[in-house]
Amino acid sequence: MISKTSRHLSVSRINIALFLGVVGVFLISLFLAPYYFAGDQIQYIGAYNAVYGHNFIDGFLPYRVYLSTEEPIHYTIVWVFSNLGFGKNIVMAAANSVLAYLLMRVLVKWRVSIYVVLTLVFTNFYVLVLYFAAERLKFGFIFLLLAILFSNRKRLSIFSAFVAIMAHIQLIIIYAAQLFSEKMHSIITGKKITKSDISLYLFSVLAVVTVWTILGDHLIYKFDRYTERDQTNAIFDTWKSFTFLVLTLIYSKDNKFKIVCAFSVIIAAVIVVGPDRVNMMAYIIFMLYALQYKRGVNVGVIITLIYFALQSVGFVSSIIYTGHGF
Image (cartoon, rainbow, N blue to C red):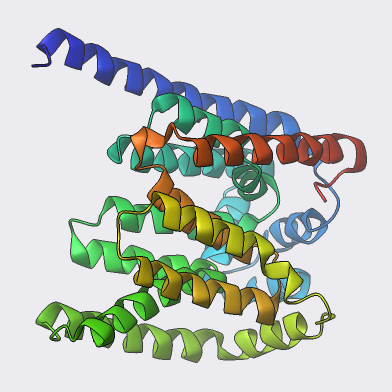
């Protein structure tokens, strides 16, 4: 039986780790942000400055000129804080701290080792990309993590999931993978459709219609832009997703068929729109299962942590010496 003292020490250790994670990410963000001025940040910095002094409606035009996007969440945040007079680096450092805090909260909820949690927050390549490069996707993940944290409060979780998709349309791939997996499993097993299933399907239809109404033109533009790339290496681009599929099958106690179905959506997305960021979705699904095995202290997690930590070294070095991470 765990004593109250031991439990109190454990909670205190976690709270200290959460505090160090939030403050550490904020300070690192402030330090590195001035070095990241090239690449995509040219457009992001331009958009942040361009919306200053405009009302909410008029500011959207110069924002679109710089970023060629119609996703409203990032614009709203940028417009609010730019017109309040906050510097972009401060705002994004704060957003990075929020992202780090929510990620740590989710992982602590899953009982992942706090050392694995801190390693992810400070050294993982994909997390650093969210901090410094993929600015719109960062806010999508903030709301995605909120949806996970609010999983016991369905309406709030569904709302957060919807906002996550509106923040970055690419996150619809994760939800499409989950829905396809659940649907195929239901068909194979002959599972009866429940009221909960009907509600989920109705929400999915409503979400698709709403997203298409608001972002339909943007989706067509993005799809055309992605599919213009050279398709010669499209199949080869899937090797990371296949690797994560194999690792997920190893560490999962869940139905293997469901996992294969979920990854089939990811792999199809890689072939159609390319590996950039989509492989991140495959990694997320892998970590969803692997982090819950032995509290994340297992060979698969450790190897991928080392691999992506080494990638982070090159990413940070590139920021400092070239002005961008890629």
